[in-house]
Image (cartoon, rainbow, N blue to C red; front, side, top):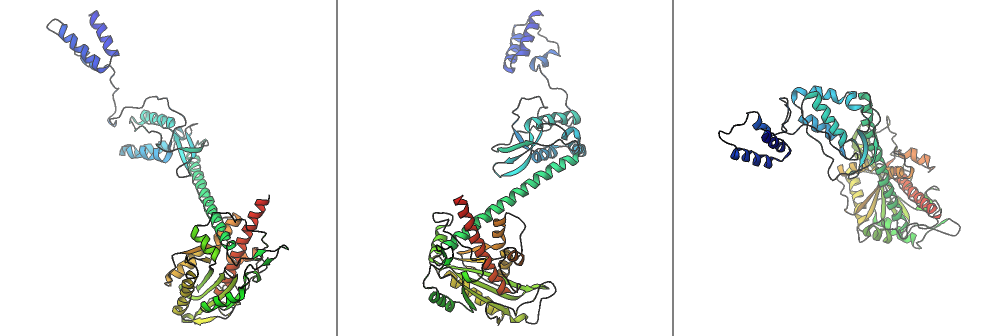
Length: 464
């Protein structure tokens, strides 16, 4: 028996294969009849049995204390989702109550927030060590062995900071809302950064134009084109209903901000197509649509302004739609169809007005080998939607700029400002807004102001 006890002691310390060999030796060398007490046989084959599990227990082993890196994390929503998905139906309500309790929430160095590097989004995190301790708590409370969670694979987090203490569920809600707010702020910054790049592109296109004004020694504008008048006459002949023509420098005192040089002579922001079209000259077309205030599907006016960058000329047009001559705004928006200040208004059917604007776009696309030109609007999404609904077909090489967004890039303020208020803030003289022709003209002036102001800012930064 002493030998048997020693052999059994060895068996409890050996691996499964060694125990099986030991059992065979005992059976072979023991004198007949061979017999072992019934309780010794399972002990010999499995000296470390699992404790009794509840009827809820799945097949994976119960949690055990582990040593893990404190910097390993799992996204908190993922952890909660996995635990809820695995939970038996009769424990769901108890599990939800547990996740809202201070016992779960009010634990230091368990919950964190950080930026997921792959998406650049703030996320709520739980450390893997905290997830394992939560799993142990769940097992003790519910006698259910939840799935062990592992650190996020192929995902890294930066700017990780501990969550504030959360003694009540309201504090947890505030923590989650703060993460959401941080993501909103990030998205807003990304938008402003994108619009800043758009403003730089726009300014580079303006300064690459052959007819762009250049600075003299006295700091005033002079035209770099000696054939402005003749080229302008040609451009006027090629457009439908070009009501007026003037140099960009003479349109407003505020759009003629002195420029002391080209800050992007060596820049690579523009694509090869954009740079080529800009350097040879192209049309910049601002557009505005006025609709009936009680039924926005009824178009009352279409106005546009062309800046020909080759000769530095403005050309303005205004169409009032005769189909809806009997309809007039006035309750919510002023009706000023008869107050176009940059030429003569043309009364025409909607079909004829659409055809005239389509001809302008097609002509613009034919003015350079690249087929490129620029369309400008204040709140582009609205005017572009109107134009598409009217059947306008935009050439493929068309470039779009929205002065609403370009101004956000200038100020960094995410609050978007209407055209009239913005013109007043920038002290750009304006008259009779809510006339489509006037609005298109002032949108072009605003575009020129924003690009030139941006150019000056870049020059000041370079000199600093």
